[in-house]
Length: 264
Length: 224
Ligand SMILES: Nc1ncnc2c1ncn2[C@@H]1O[C@H](COP(=O)(O)OP(=O)(O)OP(=O)(O)O)[C@@H](O)[C@H]1O
Ligand SMILES: [Mg+2]
Image (cartoon, rainbow over all chains, first blue to last red; front, side, top):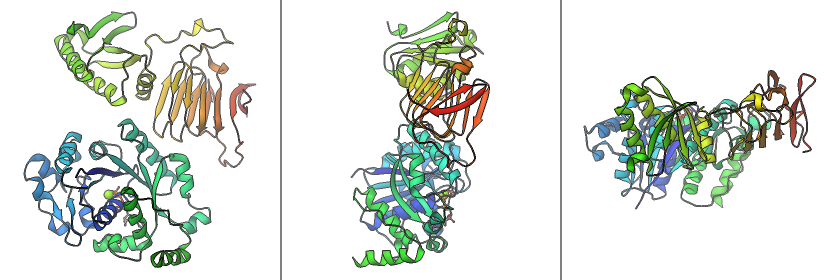
């Protein structure tokens, strides 16, 4: 086994990196892959909360890097899915306690054992971003369909190219077809038009995400949500499957579409 | 022989560090040692790097810059033959040639064309390219990207960022800006500035060329 390291990043904060990391990790594990998610957002950790593993943290990423504990001790095993693990971020440290070299070394130690290593990057273009991207084989760039988020995504893509990690693949998150139709929101095609990189998924704005985040249970772990299906599709595409994009419609007809999809 | 791989010379353009062939990492270490040896000689100065045909990436140039900085030396220029090297240096805001084109050598109607910089990719938000000659970009200039040329700027793609042409006083208002799709945030030729109209719906399809006519920036269909 040799893991693929996938870093999930964005320029602008709050666009859905952590949500994406949690859901893709769970979806890949549900598809039978061995997955570890690493929270590289040191100081602002919350991947553990979104994954519902917060109460099991003993050691964290900085403890591993500083040798306070062994790697294995910092890996929290998810009880709902086989082969899903989390390495949480430190709560009370600053980003400089980890270097890009540390991240490369850490992921190299795990490559033999896993299929996927997913890294949740902090927002911005500082050290934390460099740490998260250094070990990446692939980079997913998350953006919402807003001009400012797209501008920042473009900037991040430039930096990813400069680090020679390719332009990356794009996830458009929180799309609202009703707003697109009214001309109040950029459509996916407008976003692609600017960024000109491969689109790997479109996730609708979905209140199930908020419910699931509060419960610490990624939406992909339950059936019936549109966002969950979108994340499962991205996971399949990461696995090399050719999954057609679901045609996003207005809220009501969209749900109908999905239920047809399940019946098929 | 091994100590010939890096040589340091004083010239009319100031101190130049020549980097010859060999494994990059080794050369970097050698440079570090050399600087340590002659710390007092370099301290507080600025140097240019001459790298010949070697292709340097942006992180590589940055790492040299950091080493120099540790020795209190500032890197101001990287001169190399590989277009990739020039591009990387320009992106870091460094000069790409040691002796800038002298304005008085230019005949007004035929701006010097010998030192165009070719960039073969899209410039993304936050990326800045400065070059004393002309700039040709095969790719887009995205919103938030910035191009500044002593001479003219040609974009074989969509221009949606900001471009400043004719920054060199010797070329000035003779400079032009061309793009396959001209919908810039801002255009500047010499000291004239044009902003894109707030509503962009009046976008002309097809290539356009912007130039100064009667003291104003005007865009016209580009018919070659
Ligand atoms: N598709 C979606 N539909 C509805 N809400 C969403 C969606 N995606 C994310 N959110 C909500 O947006 C907020 C920010 O999401 P998240 O924490 O994943 O972003 P982030 O990019 O990791 O933020 P940060 O930059 O702070 O790390 C959360 O409250 C989350 O529940
Ligand atoms: Mg986050």
